[in-house]
Image (cartoon, rainbow, N blue to C red):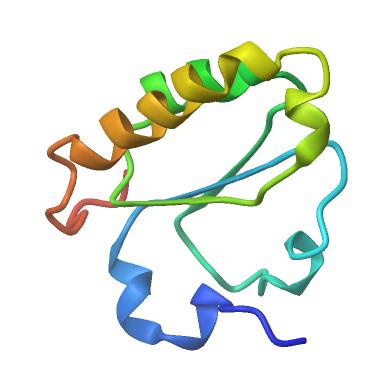
Length: 100
């Protein structure tokens, strides 16, 4: 199975990228270490995922699905979905030009 690996597209180097995964990632090891502006966060609970999304100021956010996040919080799925929707609507679409 092939995954979309962002470091293969050099144009994406201009953007701040946030990669969020759970306890176990099947994609993380495939990301190139040459990808310059990627932040990696792990969310072990739905609450941590929602906090990460609320604080995110990135042009591109990738979230690797981890069903264990919702194991004890099935009632939080709608709230997590809304947090993802809100993060997608943030005005962070302009490329990062500075070396921040």
